[in-house]
Image 1 (cartoon, rainbow, N blue to C red):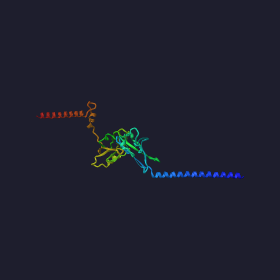
Image 2: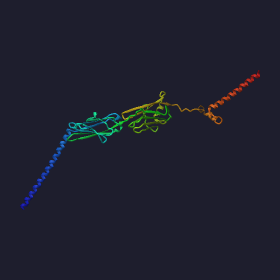
Image 3: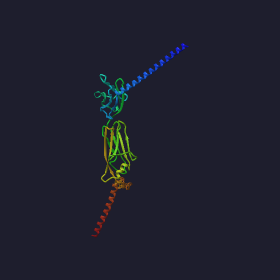
Length: 331
């Protein structure tokens, strides 16, 4: 019995020592984890990459240079690398710790100007419309954290028309009951231009009686048509309030491509309140044609007038002969 008691005591003591060791190990692990969290927070608050911003031109004309910039604040942290991507392809990298800090990677259409590229910006020479798209700037700070952030922005490369816009109209003077149509033509451009119509500086809105249509394909000629039907709102306002001195209106076609291109073309269109003019058939020779259609191969008003003239001349001659005869008889 005494031996059993001694074995029981020894077993209990070992269990107590094992439990105490596990508790100490758990406490040590918690302390290390808490210390790492505190140290990480201190490092992040003291030396941290922040305020990363990317700046890309809204639009660049084909053939010009484009400068993309990436602004950031490292505070007291060291810079590890700056990388630039077009889509998913890296085309430029800046690593200050390297003997030659700038690296260029081959990407179709991209030509990097190294003399104007550094840790905060990269310049592209002679951009083409194929380089329109998303650009990304990625900045990484150095050890021990290698904290990295990335920002993206869209670049639009545009092609401007080589010629000024042209306007064509089907009438120079219009009345209240007339149909009127005008077409504004813009040469090949990219992206598709925005075309707006104005009368006397007031924008024309599309309605059932004021029809505006545009036929356009990117990179090709763009056509915008304006059709005003009788009693259209915009024209009726002018006709109803038309003063004697207001004899015309100014029709204007305005062309815009983003904020890089703005041109317009205009024409003066006369207004007429006169009723429709009916032309007499006699003035067109139609009366003579009807009267002599069966007997005169010419069927012309001029031919009919000549025959009437001959009849009149014959009657005048007969009267003159009778008067002479009577005078002789009296003698």
